[in-house]
Length: 283
Image (cartoon, rainbow, N blue to C red):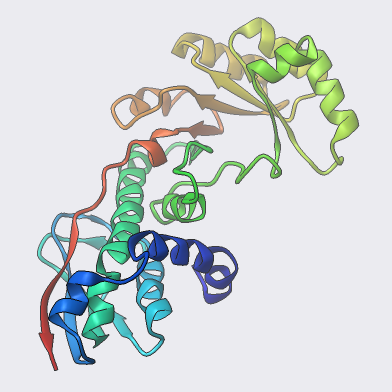
């Protein structure tokens, strides 16, 4: 996540998180550290995983005090080990204490998503299938969570509702059928937009193909039906498998032949990666 992306998309969200945690003052820190004092503290990894969100972590402290120095011994995407020192923070002790929880919340959440994503992406190694995330993200955390998916070896589906057309069951119901929904989408949307249609059975698949859908999402279909769907599609559209995909069941989907597998679990079910700030001392 580069500096431009950070300022345009992340700074305001980071500030909101800081304001949530410090509505008036940090009473605890101010009671034990009433005056300026330089200090250092170490960022320690407490379990094995994949790190993601280091620049977001750094930015928390620099928004509190731009003079805060944060150096890392790793970079986003690296596999890290329990007990490893990942970084060193140098600055006003009051800033280090007040920013600690917010910074760790971002880093632990993002690293947990990257770790979980990597564990699933590894199971697809050797296949043509790409692993996608979804819009099932934590409110106001999407930019961070989708970035973490990419760090973990996954790919991003559409970012939001303005980013692409995905005709799901309720859209199809509102339009009066698959063909009508695709026709209306083609009339309304710019020609550069791809149209994806969610189908639940082979009859809907045939309708979507006849209507000219660009991508077919095979939603909660059996493995056998998905294999048949890939054969029927025969390259006329890209195919995506979706529906309750987790690390425990993704392996059975790897050889179906779909272009993509999407999983909401990447962002809504990934546990955090346990990290900590330790050994704070004055310098």
